[in-house]
Amino acid sequence: MSTAYRAKDLGLLGCHVCGMVSRSPGREEGLRCPQCHSALHSRIPNSLARTWALLLTAMILYIPANLLPMMETTYLGETTTDTIISGVLLFIEEGDWLVAGIIFGASIMIPILKMASLLYLLVSVHKRCVVRRRHRALLYRVTELIGRWSMVDVFVVGLLTALVHMGLISNIYPGMGILAFAGVVVLTMLAALSFDSRLIWDFTSD
Ligand SMILES: [Zn+2]
Image 1 (cartoon, protein in one colour):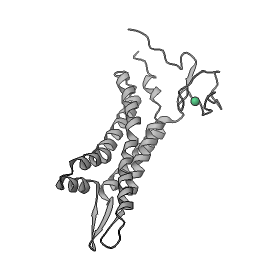
Image 2 (tube, protein in one colour):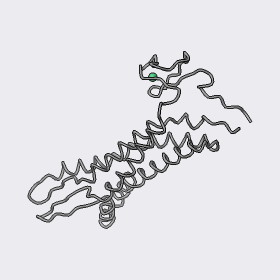
Image 3 (tube, rainbow, N blue to C red):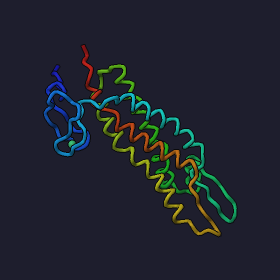
Image 4 (tube, rainbow, N blue to C red):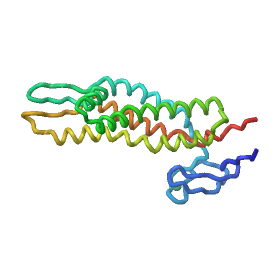
């Protein structure tokens, strides 16, 4: 079996922001990236605690995000409220499968997959798991990349509100659910950013 060296073992430091690799002078306090001047750490300090806090808050917020209305629609004086799920069902009823699919993917599937994979990564680091490291590193990169697409839903509600502002006949207002949902998206993005994926490589099998 080939030995995998970590950058830390070789005295190298990678920048989280621009990816530049520089030589570690030994001490890390106040160290800055020579290219983009962001702080350099061989491991993000308190990465696990911060990721746990952000992830758990996002999970709790995901409940009101689904239960509270995303949108309030007034049509001919009659007000209806829609949550994420009722919105998806409404679009399916109308035969609008594409929109239903986009909302389902962005608001239900991506946040759940993202929270689940962060949870899995956190638990695997806590358990000092040494198997499937390459897969977990890949999972982290995918998680970080797709998370921002959930914001599509927030934009859809924003756009609808702006477009259907005719007043008399129909009107659309964003509900409290969208606020909770935007919170979930932002918190999971921050959780992914505070998770230091290099921790995956920190434990040896012996
Ligand atoms: Zn940099």
